[in-house]
Image (tube, rainbow, N blue to C red):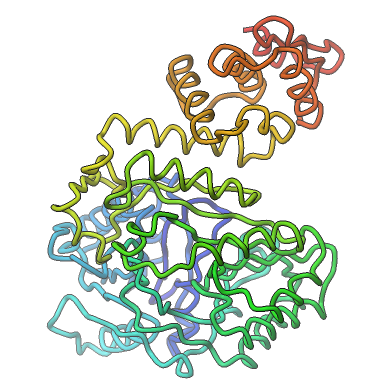
Length: 500
């Protein structure tokens, strides 16, 4: 039993909530009356409500995000129906803005907009003391970071052993890219570095080796970046893995020298390119030197062992299909290991909505509020691009078709893969739940029919990829990509699917 339960619905079990752990760490004397209870969006809200209410809390604090807003709505409505005496406090980016336009928020007792690290504790103290605020919506600006107790002791042994652990060396962002809520920040502010590294040492000593930094601009202050990288270099082992978000056009020589010291499999850099069209960049207030960005990506790919994950966004105002295709081909030529093709989403509070009328932005009214059409890309074309993004994940980003992919893409990566994508959808009518053995067969046929690739060369490449895959059997791509089973290695079910 606990007076206060902190909860949220994560996208998957492997994720953990850094936000809830900040709330717990800063509850002061209420900490020993508080528990964290995390669920996933696959669990039914009524089951989540039952588990929470079984602990008879006086207060439930719920983190609401774009991926769990519908499940959160149902959960709140169920809790208030059966236990109206329980005080429900909502927080998180999805309820921090435009709350008047979300009628379901009236079901909650309080909504904290902004940074709830300290505001949640103050509100809970008032509630438990019987001096509740009259306002339902409370705005909380970012506190001074020196005021905060760091949250990393809130990760338990199960978290460290089985889940992604998120950490942050700084908060905020100095850039104003309008598709992002960080556009509302004034600047980026670092945590006191000695205290932060002491917490990282604690996690490391407890066995954590996978650190996912959520800083928007890890390489903004290079002195801090270097100290963090050197901290981990001194603790390097064969299990260490570090994920950072980098500004693409800011990579000074001393940072490069340190990056080169990390062995393969240790560093992953997420690099937001988003668009390579200067007019679109200016329109969305994105400052980016494209030439420097290209130079730095190529350097990272050729001179370091870092894994490069680069992002592009479909549907930015004023960007048409030809512009996106050109940007995709230019980014592909920089040879990142992955290109994440994202779909523009209308995050509540983000300034992107100022372009709605002029550029005909039409967003899905349902989460995750993805773009449906623009003045320059109609609905049908946007759906094609959505499928392109999904198939790109299945084929290119999965790493399963390393030998075959260059053959599929040729000299025109976007156009060729779009042809492949169109054929796959016409043939299957689906963009997910395609079994891997079937995907091999489909790619063989698609490359033959849609791209007119030499069958013998294609079969050789696909065979190389098949033999590296977890699939068992003897691939035979001589006729429409049929995969002949090895009856000593294939189960009956695998054999049946291979011959469908």
